[in-house]
Image (cartoon, rainbow, N blue to C red; front, top):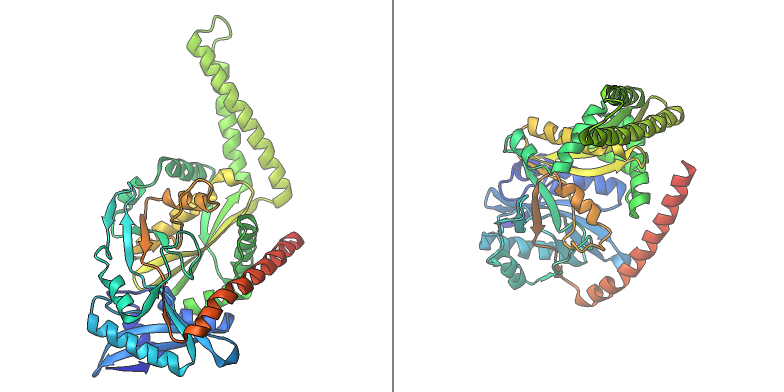
Length: 433
């Protein structure tokens, strides 16, 4: 067996339809994106057994001082991890490659399910329950980085995945009651979801900034999103969904509801009201007051924002037979229109109609304690009825132990400093807007 550098066509032909592990983070496009926007060096490597390609991986090189680096295979390798001979040889060749590049270590976080629960909370799959792959990796010298519960790792250890091979009716049955109600309300208010173009990326970016400022996390500049959109639309697919509300149309719906309530109130007897009639009047009065406040609020928004406002912008990445909700930005006004729910609903249908098999909401938490600030994100994604998936986690193959010790202790301090700096810059930019 021999490890070789692969050209795009050869690499994608093996990775994209791979029956074992196919993920957009192992795509050729992802390597080109991080090369252009993050300064990483991608290597597209394949293991040949005679003339047959039996394994591949995207390895990302992060350069460090003293000519050192580390290598990372995001959601890799793309091999049959149950094939001991291939796993052994692939590891052997990757370690040789790492030594030639003066790498401190090689990090992998395979797309291997540790546990999966359905929407009812029942365990339906434990791919690694016998710990065979886990133990094989340890035997080969990989160091498991722990069963983390939040977003401490390069990629989230938990996610929600929806099986798109089921009918749309069955998928909707798995939605929570509140999700169904909120989608219905959003539709009633005549919100709409459209597919955007590259020209809409500034709007998407603005909503991402608002979300990041609100949720206390930092991602990327606008050029990053533009590059991602361009690269993935050259030979895969990146789709931008925009959730909008037309305030004039929504106002007409609210005014119509108010008229109906007033009409029902007028139909009630004026004297000698029964107990049920009094209760009905009380409820109608409550509805009237609520609708009057809504009408007033929408009139104010109409004056401030004009007739139409984009409230949600989501970017979906397709690769092979899967789709990932990679980025989602939402405005902090008019949340009661539930445009975010409507947007998720529409791109779920879109992915289903395109014949994709898996819809991945790309990241949630394992720590479900009530004081976890990410719990709201988890509960929102859970409402769409997907499988709750836990991955096996990260493994480091240490090539230079002394440097590895120094790097893993000092770099987190440096990253924390950079994160704080980016947060300050983000807040300043949001204020400018």
